[in-house]
Image: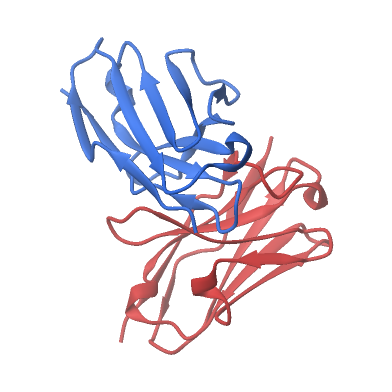
Length: 108
Length: 120
């Protein structure tokens, strides 16, 4: 099984700043099948990015993803208060699908 | 619009079984995989498995094989997830989520979640 390790565990930034989240895989991700999700308290996750860098429908271009192989990055430029959430990476290229443990983003 | 409506919260005793349903609407039910993901209290997301609603084939995470059954009812557009041999560690919110038209796809729509509490 592919283990995904996210860092940092918690990130505290101010509105307007840039957030950079990391997701490292224990082995290469097949065909770049990596996604990022946002989850707010009491809600289901929401798909933000798939295929490493493709934004899901309706996701603003403040959100971007990149990387390849085993190292992936998720960036939120120009943070807004509503970006406060937990962010998860997921690989869906090899069964079992696996999620990272999450990065909690706090907006000061 | 795509919607996944899950059944209500459940409280079960250790050793019991639970069934969670997920009724899909707003799209062609048989054309998209349905995944199940659970989240323990204050925990992250755990993938349980996936079902192809057309035909009912499944792929389950190793830790759930033998305890989880996923069933598709094409007449009602509903997928069921049965979990047996419940322990306190199975207390979690269980989500169904729509995947793509092939098994290796992200999930783009999620149900509202069903809280399953295992308590003696």
